[in-house]
Amino acid sequence: MMSWKWVRRLVNFWPPLFFTGIKATHISPDFRRIEVSLKLRFYNKNFVGTQFGGSLFAMTDPWYMLMLVYNLGRDYFVWDKSAHIDFIAPGRGAVKAVFVLEEATLERIRAHTVDGKKYLPNFAIDVVDEHGLLVARVHRTLYVRAKPHKREQPGAGS
Image 1 (cartoon, one colour):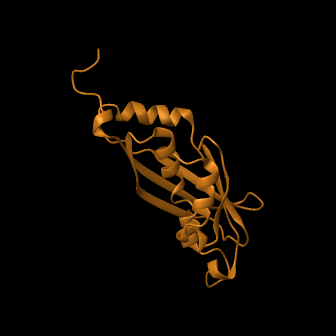
Image 2 (cartoon, rainbow, N blue to C red):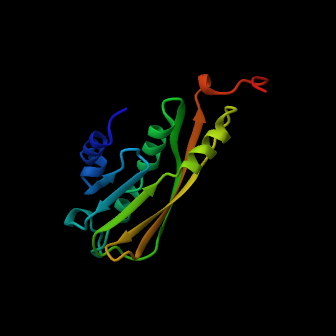
Image 3 (cartoon, helix red, strand yellow):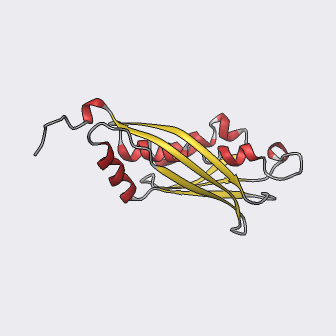
């Protein structure tokens, strides 16, 4: 897999993020912590001059999927399944979101998928302004399933 430095460079120039002004400002070497920012610009303002809701939603899109793919490895299918956003306050300036993937979450995913069943972990992401005030909360559900060669066979083991 690519290093965190290359991933950060690539995602920062990936058109859906680049053309909305979304930027990964930090990716930890173990892909367990990612920080993303979005400055308020003329091209991402809505009609009333605040952060466009679609941009706030987009800034939370690929991160947990990328983190899980990197940390679980190529033995798992990982997809975004659903998402929901609650707008709390207008984003009148720069906003940021922090994504953290705990070891306990990875252990829970592995335990729930060992027999080949799908698992749908949920993540809540807070989008905050430069003062730490909550602008939006996004709930994302991912689909995770072990690939056939990784699944425990019925009757195998103890």
